[in-house]
Structure formats: C-alpha cells, structure tokens
Amino acid sequence: MSTDLSITHLILNASIVVQLVIGLLVFASVMSWSMIFDRRRVLRRAGRAADDFENRFWSGGDLAELYRQLERDGDDESGMAAIFRAGFREFARLRTKGHNDPMALVQGAQRSMRVSLNREVDRLENHLSTLATVGSTSPYVGLFGTVWGIMNSFMALGNVKQATLGLVAPGIAEALIATAIGLFAAIPAVIAYNRYSNKVERLNNRYDDFVEEFATILQRQAGS
Image 1 (cartoon, rainbow, N blue to C red):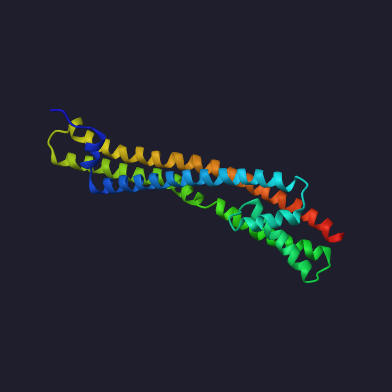
Image 2 (tube, rainbow, N blue to C red):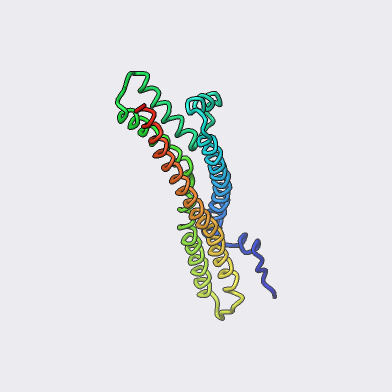
C-alpha cells in the first residue's frame, strides 16, 4: 500500500503545531517579499533622484532660483532635494532675521540639513529591521516545527509492535517541510537586507558629502 507523500497532503495531514508553524512561515515569507519589492522601488527612486538633483545643483545655476523651483514643485521632494531645501530655508531665515555671523548662519543651516538627512535615512531604512528579523528567526521557527514533527513520529512508534519506514516517513517528511519553508523565508530576506543596507549606507554617504559641500558654499556666500 503506497503512502501519499505529496507536499499538499503532508501539510493538510500534519499536526496542528506544524501547520501553525508552516502558516507563520508562509506569512513571514509573503510579508518579506512585499517589503523587498517596496525597498527596491524606494531605493532605486532615491538613487535616481540624487543623480538628477546633483546634476541640477552643480549645473552652475542660481541656488536661490533652484530653491524657488523646488518650493513650487510642492512637498513631494525627498532625499537630497529635501536636504537642500531645509538648509537653504534655514540659511535664508537667519539672514532675514539679521544674523550676520557667517559661522552662525552655516551652523544653523547644517543643523537643519542634518535633521533632514536623518529623516531621509530613517525613511530609506524602513522595513529593513523586519527583513533582518525574518532572516534570522525563520530557520529556527522552521526547526521548531521539524523537531515537533519528528518527536510526534517517534512517539507514535510506541503504539505499534513493529516499526517500519512507512509509519515514520510521513511525519518526518512533514517535519522537514517546515525547515524547508523556514529557509525559503529566511534566505531572500537575508540577501535583501544585506543588499539594501549597503545601498542605504551609500546613499547616506552621498547625502553626508552633499551637506559638507553645500555648507562650504553657504559659508562663502555668508562671508561675501
């Protein structure tokens, strides 16, 4: 008599604990994949926006006009453009209030740019901690389901006079499915976390370099 060892049959006939583990891992996998695609879109857009803004910034045009253009575009600007707007806005505000100390003007603009930079990095890092959690815990959750399934299989042997491979094979197979799904959820999450963390760090470095370069330009303008 043959035993149905198809994945669907094994999952449907697994113990409730193993089914809960598999359901949790499937949910974690679906959630992590949605975050992976979301971060891919956000980081790609941030990289293109940084390239476009740097081309506009270093084109030699008037910075005040660039600021006015960005203000007219509305509040959709993010990334390097948002950092520029925050710094130039604070620089202009302090000048309007009569602050003539070049160092105070530049430091005020730098503080505003740092706040905006941190806000942008937080936005880019959104969901990365969840991907790290899925990647680090899914194998252990799957291993728990495997241990539970194998334990139940061997406990069932105590009720039979003769142990055969056919008696324990379904239980062991359903248990190993939990491990496989745990790895399926963890591996993409770990790869995505490492890749996107590197991209966020590179964008953070670009933003940080821009803050220093723009502060130097503002210092020259404040002293003129």
